[in-house]
Image: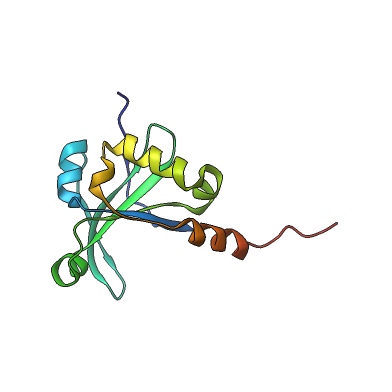
Length: 131
């Protein structure tokens, strides 16, 4: 099986949350053989996670906020993908790529973005100018 490849941590520009895992990011990093990265999120504190390219070519970012784990009961990281990729692949295709590429079972996902939110995202995109 082709594995996900860790990339240098990059800012999540134009990225959308697609799901939340109920497996801690440290466990995922160990499974994948990645290096756990840490950074500060303004107003939210310390985050741990990773940035990777999945075998499908999709890039994904995992971000687990220490505050959310310690005080809000979060069980794992939120996964983000570039907005354009989500709109191109759709939610089912994106979720399939994430699960397969990261070796996650559906039971290890606590929350998935709604199709209604994806429709709203599409509706908010600027329309091309008419000629």
